[in-house]
Image (cartoon, rainbow, N blue to C red; front, top):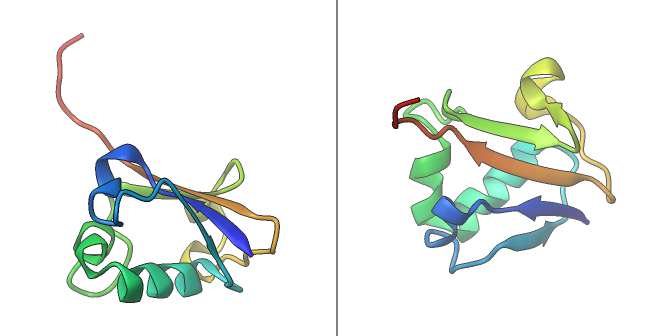
Length: 92
């Protein structure tokens, strides 16, 4: 089963879970599982059309799914999926 890392800002929407294992063949399967099991998390991950929000980055290992096959990116049993929401603000 793939390991999904939930970032700290989103954990409160996933029962304060930092890491999950999900049986999935693709990123879409993972998103569907997260959306079903954590409805509060869904609105932070997906836009009104059901697509991953533009400011949410998803990685399979070190690879951004936007450089692969987006939601259709394949997931293996030993894959580590990282969800990384963009953080804005602050001054340099």
